[in-house]
Every structure is written in structure tokens, then in C-alpha cells.
Length: 187
Image (cartoon, rainbow, N blue to C red; front, side, top):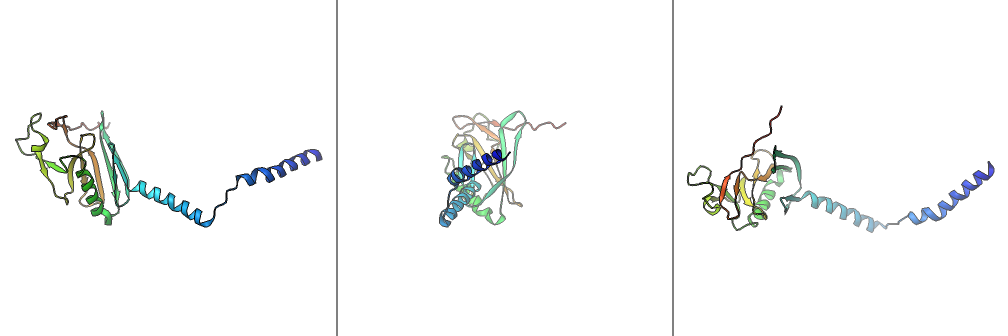
């Protein structure tokens, strides 16, 4: 029994002398603080980044996804809702307006929904769009994949939604038809 304890003791001593010192990594204080700051910046950048339909938007403040919905039978009809600090609303809205405006030649716009001249399969987007000011709370834009999307800011709460637009357009930017999804039936 004494020999077994001696062997265990020798093994433990060798582990202590050779294995544990090689696992240690020493940090000086500046290096440790630098690594912590780098990690903090990575997390903050991620919370300021909105990626939607292949387009990336760097925002001036943090946002948090609070909802993601899609309609039954149509995975293309995703709508995402994000919350943010109330004091950041105008900065986020202005930045999204600038970034979406730059994505296509059409910029940001609204569509003439009530105008009877809007005929599906005939009316080009350039004739159906209405320019919106930079203080708008709802607008359409074309993503880099040439699909029609919208952004809508809640007027009372610090939320905004982004999703596929309610109209479909073809490759010639002709408005094909309203793309109204069928909501899921909940039993």
C-alpha cells in the first residue's frame, strides 16, 4: 500500500512540475485590459449591426431583436421587430433612412395605394412611387437583391420593423401584384 501511495505522489509531483507550468499564461495588466476592451467592442458592434436579406446596416446605437414572424407557407415573408433605447430613435431612424436610400436608384419611397392608375403588371415602380421625407416613419426601399422591402417605426413605442414589402415587382421593376400572405390558421 505504501508503494502505491509513493507512486501516486511521484505522479502528482511530476504533473505539478511539468504539466501545470506549461498551461499557465501570464497577462500583464495592459494586455488584459486591451483584450477586455476588444471583446466589449466586438459585442457592441454586433448589437449595432442589422443584417437583413443580405444587406448590412451599421447603426449609431444598440438594437435588440424582440420578434421574428413569418407567414405559414411563405418563408419569404419574414418580418423582424427590433427595440432600442427611446433616446436613440431619431439617430437610428435617420441612419436607416440614409443607408436604405443608397441601396437603389429609387431611394426611399411610398407607393400610391389608392391611385387607380396603379395597375398590376403594367405600372413601373418609377411611376407608382411617392418620395418621402427623411422624417417619415414608414418607407419602402429596394434591397441589393432588387426585392421590395419596408421599414416601419412604431409611433408610440421604441420599436421598428423590417420586412418584405406588400407588393411584388418583376425584373423590369414593374409592379406585379400585391403580395398579401395568408396568415396561419391557429387551431
